[in-house]
Amino acid sequence: MAEDSVKIAVIGCGYLGAVHAACMASLGHDVIGIDVDANKIARLQAGEAPFFEPQLNELLVEGQSASSLSFAHSSTHASEADVIFICVGTPQREGDYAANLDYLDAAFRSAAAVAKEGALLVGKSTVPVGTAERLRREIALTRPDLTVMWNPEFLREGHAVSDTLGPDRLVYGVANGDDEAVERLDAVYARLLSEGTPRLIVNLPTAELVKTAANSFLATKISFINAMAELCEASGADVTLLADAIGRDERIGRRFLNAGIGFGGGCLPKDIRAFSARAGEIGADEALTFLREIDLINLRRRNRAVEAIAAMCGGSLLGKRIGVLGASFKPESDDVRDSPALSIAQQLQLQGASVRVYDPEAMENASRRFPELRYVADWQSAVAGADVVAVLTEWTQFTELSPEALSTHVRSQALFDGRNAFDPATFREAGWVYRGVGR
Image (cartoon, rainbow, N blue to C red):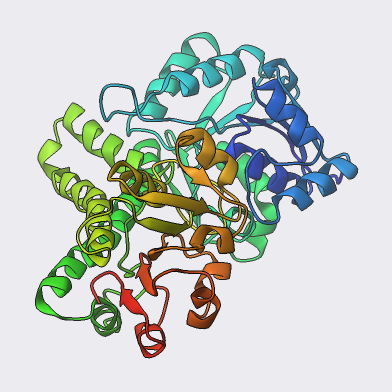
């Protein structure tokens, strides 16, 4: 290892942790990833991520070949680390909207129990505001030598490696203006800082709020344009042209003003719900009441999509064959958590349609989530004999399909474009019935 390398442990090797461990090793550090799931650890040791993420497998192999990256399933292996990153999940709590912090609390306790003297404990998980200070106080009771910081992640699935190695900012949450802790985390991110990555030093609650506020703003922007899509459908306007026009305003911007069937995944839905729940707990409930409407708009898009496809079938889905292209919540991911595409596919089947689903990467996860759906091996099998082709995830291999390529397989030339990924004129000129969102 280089003289400036840092000994790092990453507790939690799910999506965030596996990516972070591999990327920190690629920056020249000595990294060990730790997870209680022995099967997950075995796959990582074999250079195979337990989920699909571009570039990650290559980093796993490179890191382990260079002996800068290893994996284990006991927190005792964190005992030599100078910096311990906590990257466990904070899922929605069963029965309400609040975050379940059981895994996070357990990870901090296990880290504190084995950490070397003076180690830095750095939380990266998305948490309700106030969590970091609570953990800092609890750990100080038994291990006053340890320092707790918060360093939120801003990863996009499908771009997680590039987001980690080329972030648009680094946020350090510290208590009491701890300059020494800042210097130690700077050593971890030295290469990124030398390349000009901006660094913001804030207190612990601000660091926690940065991630949840960013996700809430993004969800608001997406739901706003989807609400405009409903108005466009009622008035005859085109939401894509509307987004182009308002996106020219530099105060608004065009990014993420793409109407469709809504957002999903393991972050945005549960994060905005937990954010709203936490606001109520600390007496600021009225500040985030708008997030409830954002959530409702998002969920309503799924019902509207089913209604649109039914209308294309003459008003009833009974006995109709629907070819569904896409199961993951977004392209370049195999994540089907709260996936709008998979939710719509299930609703179509429940209303009597014969549904065939294909996704380039998410078939295994989708079949575990909704085993009652029929999954096929390729897009041709999905659309064969279809009365409507429904493109619900904008994978490139789907959006590059031409009307002519599809026509040789379908029964009826009808396309529901759930992501507004196609040119309507191209399909209509080829004789297709085209229906997008707000167009």
